[in-house]
Amino acid sequence: MVYNEHEEKVIFERCITFLNSIGIQTIFRIIGDDSFLPGFLIENGTVIIDKDTVQYPGDILHEAGHIAIVSSADRAQLTEKAIIKRKDREAEEVMAIAWSYAACMHLEIDPAFVFHNEGYRGGSRSIIESCDKNEYIGLFMLQSIGMAIGGSQVVSKTMPFPFMIRWLRN
Image (cartoon, rainbow, N blue to C red; front, side, top):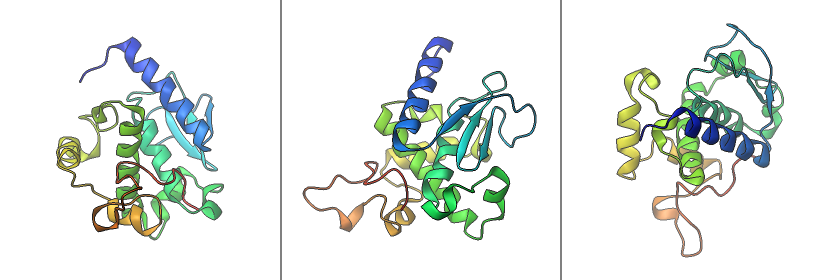
């Protein structure tokens, strides 16, 4: 689904409201070219947003996913540059992908909002197609840290992924 500019703005605002409600702070300020993704920066566990330079608003959920999946002890010090240096960065990357997909489902938005054609090294379509088949990249790792369940872990009263048991790692 392709959103028009007004719909995209409304969805972006809904994402911001959601993030703030689960404990991921967002702040608006000018960041210029000093970020990995245009318009977004992670600074001390907060998503910094430069509305004037955002190219793909859906990137906010993936960036927030990086904050959500680190331990609470690490979250307050997390920065964009620190993510790259973390020893489990590859695992955390796929967990952030799974987390952002779950956020899309929770917010009832098209995953293409996050997994746009210009991201994920050309693999966005593959990520969406895998999720459509209930083949979730990163689910096993989210299970291992108690944020979601799936497969044989599902019991009658617990919803399986993409439902999240908790949005922030302990």
